[in-house]
Image (cartoon, rainbow, N blue to C red; front, side):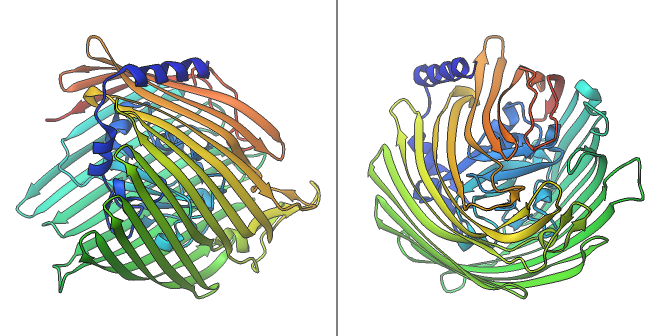
Length: 597
C-alpha cells in the first residue's frame, strides 16, 4: 500500500508545475542553524523546516503530529494528540535531543519524558526547524541527535476559531486573536481538548495558552502555559497509572540599538514544570510521586559584520536548574557558558562557519563543544555541504536519584559525550523539485543506560555504553500552486552498541527504517486532499515490529469557513511506539475552522 501511495506522490511531483526551489532556499531566513538569523542557502548543516502552511493543511493537531513529517525524527507517542511523546533524532534516545521554543530551552531537568510538554498552541506556531546532528556548540547540553526549535508567530495574524469532534469522545477547540495600539501589539492563542480514551485510563484533558506582547520593533514578552490531565495506563509498568503535568514559560527579549557596528541582543527566561504521578489509581497511597522543577536562563549576544558576507558573534549565558521532589529529593545545578561563532563567504558560492562553546556546571565540570561546517554551490542547481561537531549531555535528576521497587538510579552517573559528522547534497531541479541526500555518523561515549542482570533484578543507571551510529537521509519535495505541496522522506539507521552482559532498557530501542510521505492535493470544487503516511520498522530488546499509518484530511473552503473530515490510522494497525503501550486504532473527526480577513 505504501509503495502505491509513494509512487503516486512521486508521479505528482514529476508532472505538476511548481515554483523554483532555489528561490525559496535563498529567500528563507532560519534561526536554528547559526547564532544569528541566516538565509537557508548559507546553512552548512542538515536542516528541516516545517512551515505554517503545511501545519494548517495537514491532518495534524499537536507538535508530535507535526514532527512526524520529518523522517529523521522518531516520534514515540503514548496516545493520540501527542498527550505524551518522546522524540528521538537520528537514532539517539529521547534524552539526547534538545527542544526549544524561540531559542529558549524546554528540556526538563527531571526527565526527558517531559520534553514533549510544549506550552504553545499549534495556532501560535509559525514554523518548526529541526537541526539534525550535534547542536551543543550553539545551544549547550543535550543536542546529540539534533535540535527542535519551535518558532512562534511574529507577523500580524487574523482572528481564528476552530472546533473539532470525533471518535473516543474527542472534543477540541482553539483560537487566536491580535490587537494593538500605538507601538504595543498583543497576540493571544488558546487551545483545549478532551477525550474519553480508547481504553481504560487512557482519556485526557489538556489546555494551553500563549501570549506575545511586543513594544515597538525591539522588545517582546511571551507567556506560555500548558496543563495536562491524562490516563497513563501501562506507560511505566503494568498498572492503570494516572498523571498530571503543567508547564509555565516566561520569556523576554530585547534588541538594543547598534553600537560601533555591533548588533546587541539580550533575553531572559524562567520555566517551571510540575509532575504528579500516580502509579496505580486503585492504590492511591502507593508509589505516588510529586515533582516540581525550575529553570532560569539569561543570555547576552553581540554580532558584528566584519566585511561583506563575514560575521562574528560572541555571547554569554548563565542559569540553573533545581528540583523539589517527593521521590528524587531537593537538588540544584548551576551553569555558566560562553560561545563564539564566525561565518564567512569565502567565495560567492562557498560558505564556512565555525563555532565554539564552553559550559561550566557546578556538579559536572567544564565541557567544550566545537563545530565546523562548509557549504559549496558548484552550480546554481547543486549544493554540497558537510559538518562535524561535538556534543555533550548531562544526566537528568531521574537518572541520578530516582527509586522505586523496580528502579534504582545511581547519583554518580556523569555526562555523555559524542562526535557527529554528516555530508550531503541538495539538487534543485528545473521543474521546481528539491532532492536531498545526507550521510551521517555519530560516536557516543559514556552513554547512560538503565541495566539489570536478569529480569528478576531491578534497573540501575550506569555510564556503560559506547555507541556508534551511522545512517542516511533521503527526501524529495515540491511546492505547488495555491500552497499545495508534495514531499516524501526516508531515514535508515544502524546502531552498534558496545556489548554488555546485562539487559538494556533504552539504547537499542530505535527505528532502523522510517518512511514518511505527505501531500496537499487540490481537487475540483475547492476541495483539498491531504494524506500523510508513516511506515516504521522498529527494533527493541523484545523484538521487531513493522507498521504503516495512514491519516487523511478532506477539506473544503466555504468563504471564511473551512470544513474538514479526517481519518487517522485508516489501516487500523495494532502497534506500539513505546514498548508495552498500546496505541489507538482507526478513528474519525470533523473539524470546522473560521479565519478572519
